[in-house]
Length: 465
Image (cartoon, rainbow, N blue to C red):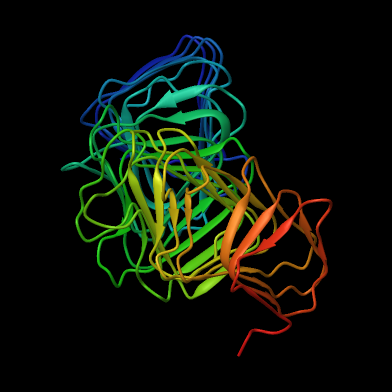
């Protein structure tokens, strides 16, 4: 065993060293502590060696490190020279923030293991490495990919069909040019996944890969539009009682992107536990394929704060039947015309902003005895019989001016204005077949368009009770 208590341990130029034994390079924990491999030095750590560096390591320009050992590093790993790694493992440990900086020089890492003292301690990757396969074991701490460099890799080392983010750990993607490539594995989420910039893929080809969350896990998407999470199939809790904190401030979540989900007792987007958090202020949740055995959007989170965002139904296959079953509000609702999907409600729905409907054919949007309330514009681009309201109520509840518009005229059976501010502007002719409720004395501006009442229709200045 070799112990050094100096601030720097240097391999000078023209020095060749092969380490084949257990060695601890133990420094006092100051910022200048350093294992430095200088210009023209060649250092090899063999597969039998176990190295612990209580500081940082620097491979200088012209120097070479051939690492096949297990090397534990407390602080930073900097490479400006040549780094070869066939079988070695690098462990980042302790309570210091670590930076991996390869300064534009491709550096081989066979395996990087994050074993910090807690989730709040970061290991920051600020440059690409030479491994586009599986290299990351995330145990404790946060692995953050940041900057603007281009790098595409599988990242996570898989096991038995899963990649895992454990409890007390986080994977943080914050680089718009970084891509976590998809594989046939699902993600088992115990800790936190945060995507601020970049693309994170779960699944490849047409396999049924899911994001399966466990109790107390966290998923954050935002804060830019370049934050994208693509899931081949579904997002759901491992157990129906497992809670999640779902927060979205931008970006996009794509679900059932290339495959048809088949987990029978889970929706495509599924939050069952009422103690979950659902906070959305911006961004898009897009669902592309149906689960023929369950709902497409199911949400029972009681801790919800929704001020924006969009739920987009964008069918990847013809004439699919989508469902929404949610006690939490959504930001806006868009039914895209592509492949003419059908959308049915299985719970009263509150839409904070716009409702936009497109597609051809009868009964494309069916309320199914559930009420619909929305806070901004009604955009009707369906065929004349595309909206099936039945006996349900449609309520305008916004605090701003709201428009009834679109390429098609709208017919409502029971329409209620229960607004806290603003007026309702009629941008297309409208027909009322049952009743119009002016609950809040809202001004209705016809704007040269006709309002037609059926023979037995009524207008109320209250809720009609």
